[in-house]
Length: 458
Image 1 (cartoon, rainbow, N blue to C red):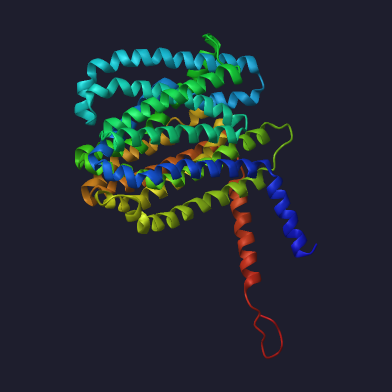
Image 2 (cartoon, rainbow, N blue to C red):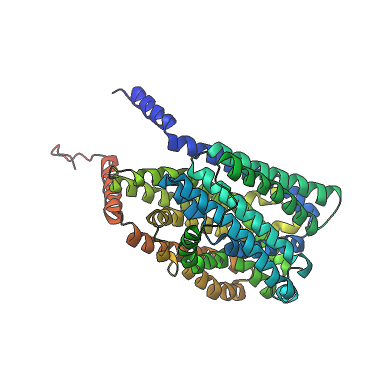
């Protein structure tokens, strides 16, 4: 086949691929979703101080911790249940999950409210706003449940639209409260609350009316499924929380809340890598689960090659992005935040390694053997973070927090890979050797021929 015709055939197949189309939609949505905060970063960093950003970052730490409690890590189970094609069982599971989140939020409020002053002394977050964080965690649980179902149903456009509406509303309210009215970090928190409530109501309507999965019911069998899936993952998710959030608490105590603000801004600037990785993962998961659920045995060797190539490309992407971000940072943020540049490279590298983690972790989720990751993935990464972070901050200064984050993600990724080898064995070694063999063949073919005096080729 002539080269133009061959290229046209390849382009046609790529364009007609449902996976590529979904990936493109998720990617465009992620770019837009990350571009909006980045466009407003030059505005907000000129009205808010590093200390304001530090307080907001600390609130994120606590919200993530509360969300672990309310959500019971059930989002993967709810997404996986879609591929069982049992609408009634899925309805009972979703209804029980939302009801349980409401009940647990009440218990959490009763427990946290009397100890809010102690929590302030530990985290540096104002005690008077602690109860509000439980509401934000409940909102996050409802929204994530709905988004996980949309993703499982392979509806990327609806997924992206809801995310963009959420981000746009959040940022518009932030500009109103912070820029127009002149509020400090409290204005940013109000914007998060109001936009979150609106999106949670949209999500509840989608679960109840459009998907017909939300009813006022509490099913014991579904409750057991939630606990058997989620409880073994609690060490895993606590480890994940430690890896992504505890650096800010260390910075609050070992450095300053302003340093936490710089770390938070750098986290936002590095986050497009996480969003790109997440977009690919969001499109890849439905395609992977559908293929593995098929009665026809999948070509594991071919799949392993594709996944290994993707895993190798992610750190390279992070390095290029980190170098570029270092030079363009002064154009994005105000003078008070120029110190965030040093953090971006390490955080971007950590996000890329997290993408490699997703590649292996999805196989564990599909196999429903998530207990394998309880102690060997994020839990180990969290332990590494707890030990390494204060040491690196002591020797390298605040930048040590970002370096520790990258190290923790690497430890977690290695642990996740070992779990995937047990949960869903794949021919990783054969795939790696075949890639290396192709690479060597290509290199040999590229070498120029050397002709000796006798006329033989060397």
